[in-house]
Length: 243
Image 1: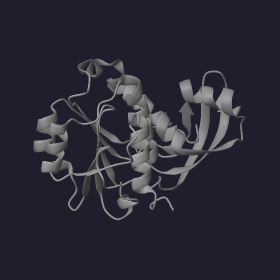
Image 2 (image 1 turned 30 degrees about the horizontal axis):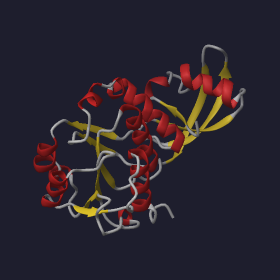
Image 3 (image 1 turned 180 degrees about the horizontal axis):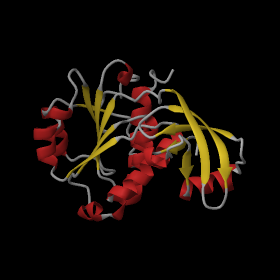
């Protein structure tokens, strides 16, 4: 936990915050914090600052928090990702969130197993917990927005353009493409990135992306697992912005 993340309901009328559960366990057993300890903290969807530990026992911890900075700047990429298998789904969430993506769309495609949509990993509370863990890891406070689309063709033809910012670079990953991923593209314009399943998009799907204004790009001929592909794409697109 690189950032102690408070939620609005943690705060008491006197302005101090009270935490328990997983965050308390982290403070007691991992950080081994004692009263007077200062730690980096933030409030969900708000600022980043410092929290002073006032009291800690087996039931709860009380802290005083003061925000003095904005959260890290978001990466200007809208991620469209074919729904991966459940455990990989969690890894993709972490990769995208820690890279600073704030809009993530998961969609069905020909090589996505229908059973993936029934996974408990897609439950609202399970997703929220994973996103909070990712924010704590990367020192961010702003939750990304998630959307799910069960019909591929309708999503690409009827919805994608509506969620595409004006002037955005629209690209999709394809090992067969010849154009490389544009380095640092997200630092100069919005990017909409489509990443397929581990088996890749089929010919119809690639043609549909192309027909709707997307350009094929590649990370190379090697086939990457979904979480590695997402992380690699986002790193290359945002590398200039991170300097």
